Image (cartoon, rainbow, N blue to C red; front, top):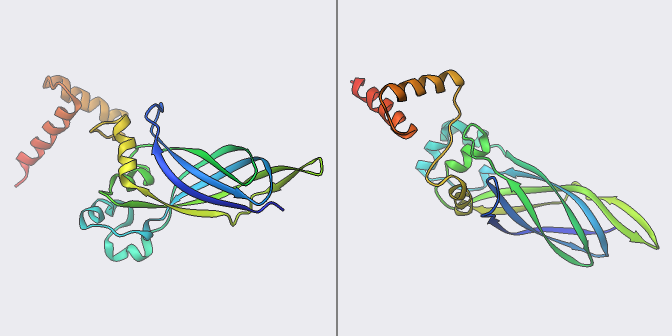
Amino acid sequence: MTELGFDCVGARVDPYAAAPGLVLTLRITSDTRVDAIALRCQLRIEPHRRRYTPAEAERLADLFGDVSRWGETLKPLQLANVSVMVPGFSSLCDVDLDVPCGYDLEVASGAYFAGLEEGEVPLLLLFSGSVFAVDDGRMQVTQVPWSKEVSFRLPVATWRQMVDTHFPNSGWIRCGRETIDALRRFKSTRALPTWDATLLALLDSVEERMP
């Protein structure tokens, strides 16, 4: 049986991608010739494996609650499920794994990333799939063991670079259609030039009414 080893040796941003995403470089080793691997990878965020500043803890309260409860609430977050076809190799192969990353703050992973200032994000990559190899003139198909996994610490700076590539100095908030219609009427009646100006005007009006 082919013995495979996995490692994640780097992460980068694809500046030409149509949507936000990261490219992780996987390094795969094998003790025998492999003709192809139909590889699947589940990526999880492991929030309990890093420290947080007071400001980060405040921004993450919506996800994990008060810091006093973090011993119970810092559970893994799902990031993505992706697949890649690994070409044939003899002993070692580097392959790029494209990981789509949204910027929806209502999605747990997006809210988590957005709440961080610096440092690294602890990821866990869990592998599965099918290994194809020719043995004695016959094609053999074996499964990637479910026990194959690897940890990787993704720099927060890399994620921010990805976001800034597609949404420089901006973010996304999803609203219901009725809310959007009400905002549009408010913007139009006051001849406000941008949505930023509209939201700031609303905030100013609320602050003026506060005691």
